[in-house]
Length: 334
Image (tube, rainbow, N blue to C red; front, side):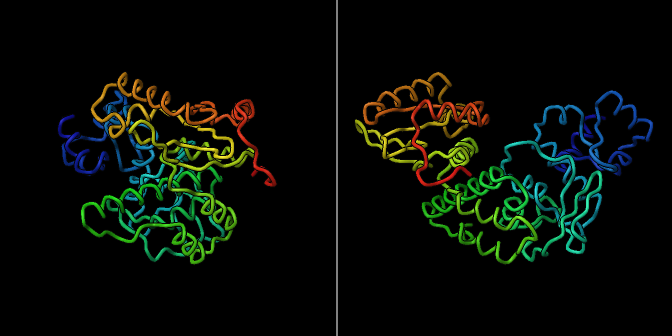
């Protein structure tokens, strides 16, 4: 029986509709028994997931299933937006996904919230798309909604991610000799902001777009840049190139005025397939150590930090101050 349910899970992208359970011959009592044994989990009314799969999922995947189940239950009139659109667009979030599903309701008077669904009033999205069979605001619109309604950190992180992803895509297309859709740029996002005209958060969105930089390679690098600005430190140059002994290296951050390199060390650096390139973790760490030894003589200092330090604003401020990271002259902290 579980094998049949696994098949349904594959067909419906991890979800199992009630009708599929009935078609497989399961009575309501049998379904309840599976739920009591944690072999089946109810995601939303009318939609289930295998218990083992649900337990193995991270927060992103769980919220993605909740969003899709809610959208399927509500029907095609629902247009997912904000966090719910972001998770289906595979955008990164520093923080926790909400428990409620977010949707665009142009006729919603000032927005409304139920236990499982939050409706946002706003301009309809003429460029909404289908992802996995559900209606979702376009990627540019989703970025605008998130930048306007979320924190500066969340908005910048998501925009950084998309700008970086688009740069990589365009480079690949040029190398492959193919042409894809026009890339999403900061100029395009400013234009989208003018068209959306959010009821609140316009300046927040403008600020996030202006600050965003596609040279940030991951969420940790975006977090660090936001912290520099928030804490009143000089925002450094990104991905500066160094040539040494026939090697070319790009550093995360470079404060040229004081010849200081900064490097964000996240777990991703030692787990990502493109970084590992077939090597074991010891080989990657040794290569990183060799890289650091070659770079140190070229600058006055090189400092590293990770997620725990960057996430704690107070500790990060003390760290940056101790390491003599230059202050942003004539500019107040954000």
